Image 1 (cartoon, rainbow, N blue to C red):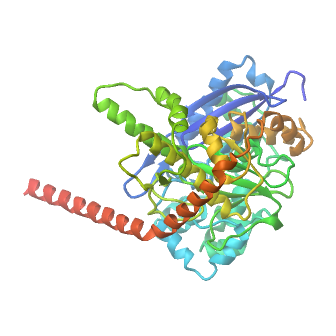
Image 2 (image 1 turned 60 degrees about the vertical axis):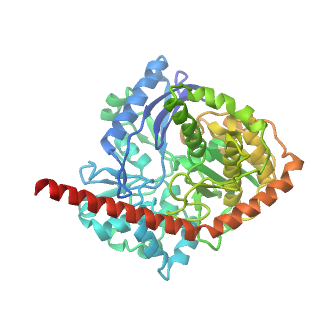
Length: 536
């Protein structure tokens, strides 16, 4: 390694933001540049992202990172990329997009999920991948496209994920990583494609769309001259294809630091709950839900359950306050509301109101139900806004417990990351609701850091991933925060009520969904009638 090369860059192409982050070789974050991501949602359940624009935004973020660090291009040892998981990014033989990418929020494949879930081979598919069926996944989306829009697949030469698309634009190489390959089309024990899984998805004739599997902790490709011009970096800079963002966020936040029975929860827009285990320790639940995602550490995988929404529930409640204030002619900044949250939470009683945090129109962990919706239970005239806020935070903690329950025994410690984890009261609620100590990870950009750590190992900065973890992760873990013993039993009772209600609500959610469909059908018929009369 040249002495003047002392920076590793991690790119994290998330759902809402693309970030380019520079780290020194000891793991200290030096600078970050970001670009807002862009996707469109349709009334048909579609959620699509323009692929060309995604690459342009990534290149812009890297150029702007160069504006913040003198001599970045010449100082860069390697670049690594991770990104949002699932979704379908189709590319033709000329490496051009076939259409806008279907991202993980796309719900159009829900009918295909229901069809595949009834197939006799579904349990064996689940036991191979360790991953439940969901409309967000590329395998299900490809099966749905094959049934409804096969011409798209006819025009495609390869099916990529978000990070794979960016890697293609950076290097000209078509590849995917072991994590997404195995939880979608393969076997988590071998980290390879599994023909029986591909057959079970009805995609045997489309197997040619699956790219080679590449482990970016041992193999890199060179930054192409064209990508160098667009990003401001030097041609030939080593580029590492990271694992999926969930795995690398967990890696960067401490899901694996050598201790036994440790877990990590990210309380961001989505709630991601994971634990690192050996493949033989994986607990495959009866419901057939969750993910098993390989880590870039030999012999380790993560078991994962994800809530569709975590801090989005808090955002929704604060938006309600903001709307009321605006309607009355008052201006309240989001910063002011967030600053008041700790005071509001401290003055409330635990367990006064029950809340299920399914605000993001559906749920995928630890159960899959596109009709699931959020709701409060137990309101009385005595309750006020702070009680609702506490119920929302408790709901997030109980949802995390629900997810860990679906992965077997509770962990002995949970590492918390994400913006919401900065709240001391939230951490205390999570510790008591989970019944285990928690500690925070002080690293800001865990996903980008996880990617950069892979590049560090691939280029010899560190000999192994465990060495990189010892330098980059362990020093940033906060002090252990034990649960309040007086809250453990009340939250045990509250969780029992949470679970009873969650298991009883699906028929109500289904009826409400039918009402929505009938209203939408009526509105569409009314609109047609208005157009007919207007033209008559």
